[in-house]
Amino acid sequence: MGFIKSEVMDVGVDSTWKQNKGPLTSKGIQVAFSGIESQTQTIQSSISNEYNTKVGIHTNKDIQTASIVETMLEVRSQLSAESRRQQKEGQADFLERVKDTILREIQRTNEGKALKDYDVNWNEDVHTVTCHTIFDIPPLLKEQKVEFHITHINWNSTGEWLAVAFGNRNEIGWCMSSGYIAIYSHDKLLQLIDIQESYVTSLAFHPTKSNLLVAGTYDGTLKLFKLDENDYRLMSTTPIQFSHRDPVVDVTWLRHRQDKSVLVASLSIDGKIHLWSAKNQLQQPVQSYHFTNAREVPLSTSSFAFIDIHSGSTLKNTTIPTTDSYFLLACETGDLCKTVFKGINLLNTSKLRPSKSPPTLTSLNKPRRNPIEFQYASGIGYMELVRCSPFHRHCFLSLQDDLCRLYHVLESRDKITLQPSPQSRLLSAAFSPFRPCVIACGAENGKLYLYDLLESSVHPSLEIEVGAPVCQISFHPSSNNTLVTADDSGSIKLWRLNNKFSSLVLNEHALLSNLI
Image (cartoon, rainbow, N blue to C red):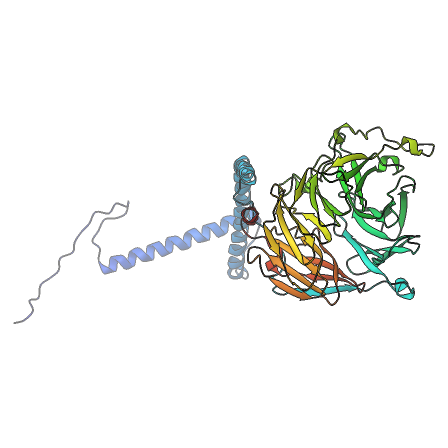
């Protein structure tokens, strides 16, 4: 069987283009492509000639071949620049149109709770806790034959300066030895302030004016300093006849709710609190209180802490505790009490001015008897301190013997009890200002204990060897990974915390509320 040969007839199709109609043969296709190529070259040539006419390029045989490529590149560059300009104008128009919508959505996000506990970590990831700076006792103090201890430390509001008080905690009775206040920067000692015939027991920087420092002393007086980089000025000192009769154990700044003025509250061992104002240069207290228990026996106090109703809210950065806030009193007998100033709303400091003549004792208001309102269940040992949480207005801690107890303000019994070492007394403790569930405790055995309550409320998350009894602890107010410790050897150590203790955990505020 063979193949049958036959002729294939040409097929004609009407073209939709306005061209010559004819059969589509292989030869015709080649001719069509040749025509298209010729037309393309003609278009490119006309574009080139038109551009040359506009930009003023005169061509000839010598430069025609080389200039075509350059011309086309220049045209492309100009077209790209024009395209980018139009694109930017379009983006600007678009952003202008959606600006109101974006701002409205950002406002809704800020008011909502979606990003409430979100914290951006701008620092590099750190996995270990290290000591990066050590300040030894100043040389001037080493030269003296007196033993010095660190009695108190305090950061200013910006975290630029650290004030350290040097004295003798073993002093009993009348004190005639001098103490010192050392002002440190991040890497050096700026200045040393000599406190004549007494030593400082408590320090507190002004909450907004970072160069104002108030110091409570062993002889019961208060001193107000104004600091700068290279010098200091003693602005005022409380007269001895109006000062406390016993050592000042704690000082803090309060805001008077009525006239918005800022007052200094000082607490002495005999259970008295004096309120002072810089408006009259601390010439005499504007109000005094004497606290007693339910049987009207005066309390012997060791520390106080004011409950800030704005703790944990967005207003925390702009407010300080007010004079009508409830506050906690820790006693040497082991009692732990809650109370409030009686009749404080009647106090008006707006018209206070320095007196031209020295005030007399008859002009001093007698201390108001102020009984406590609520007493918490605690032990019978010496109560070292009491501190309130910066994140939860109902949470506070107390230190007693080897126990750190966490309380709810409205409940008498403690909710959580921390005991880092049964054989060692706790000397200091502090809440982290960046993580609600992180607490640092310093012990007499020379160790620093860091607790993360999200991990465990029984065992510390980290135990650090400091080398000497840790008498003071303070977190940096603006750097979330910096913690300072002071020990009985006179050394101040700055620790760099890892991300575990410095980065906020999602919903941590709510988790603390569940624990308390």
